[in-house]
Length: 462
Image (cartoon, rainbow, N blue to C red; front, top):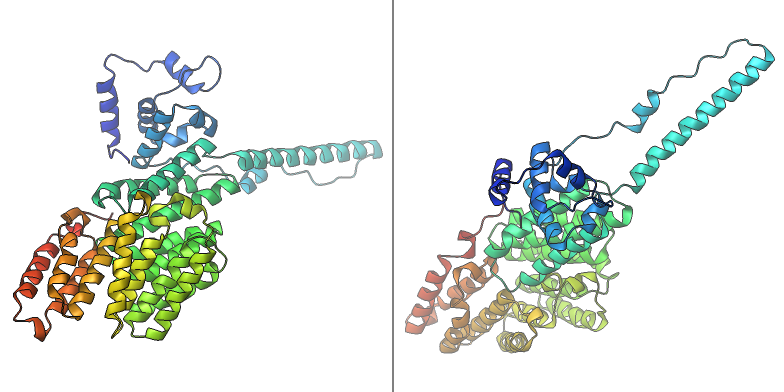
């Protein structure tokens, strides 16, 4: 996303890229007139240079109309570079101060009738003029917007791109883009928009914050993850978006589950029940599926199975929403639901056969799923559940075979949930009955080598 240049570096790079070019007064005038007739469309580098010189951010130098009419590539560059700048903070004086600056009406004095009539008319006209000026100021504020439809569409496309990429690409390749896109969304929200645009921005900012919460979780920082998730929920609440409210509660429950805060995980799932009942998106399936895992980890088999059944019923009622349209991590496809059922049952005593069968169904579903529904992390989770079920039933060779594709994942894909899952297999292999088995020792050693270089060592959450 953002290039990360300092402001002097931006100027130097612009000059280096356009040797001999001079931004003289005639050129500046033609740029300032854009998009009027006879003007010249600015390049992104020119706007960046001016923003650097004026001490503001690139998007603040363009009206929504001008930004919308820029070349698509140039507009995308500006949006991506905007996060590298600090927006100007010159706020207009409050309306009350402007009104107070108007000369006060003179106190009434004894005047002849004709003079009194004229004075009264003058006062009324002055009041009407003052009211008109207040109306004009309000109209300018109400109509003004720091974002146009094209810019909003560009942000939506970028959020969709990252949501689709998250389950399939290594975290280090996405993290910088997520951080920069969140900064762009927050800076736009600090400006002025029409109510509908503000709602859309809150949804997009909430989605990006949720992805950053997942990223924080994936590098093993549950506290940073919860901070980002709370921000995502505030955005969802401000937008009045039940789908995003539900999705964020699911995410909070997931973070708590992997952190070992099992009762908190159940609590977050329960907090999302009300909004889940009002949404038709796949987040309504994720919520009970995630609750089932937390219930099972607490040893509550009956409620875990009941939650799995609720997830099945919710799947039948799904119609999809705008989060599902974004896809990727913002949706909850069937293969992921099957993995969650396996992950829940792996906790339940005597349910190893059911867990292995569910894990096998999840793996098969992922292998045959369209690319948009694939997820290397959840597929790895299903394979570790299959391996763990086999360890619990004494099939050590089968466990090693199930785990092999997971242990072949490169370091940049060894996120927190996968590392925690393989360590569960490591612990199970340490049972007294397996201490003399060479395959158990070899698999444990492979797991130990695998977990020494996790994705957290390659990523930094800012």
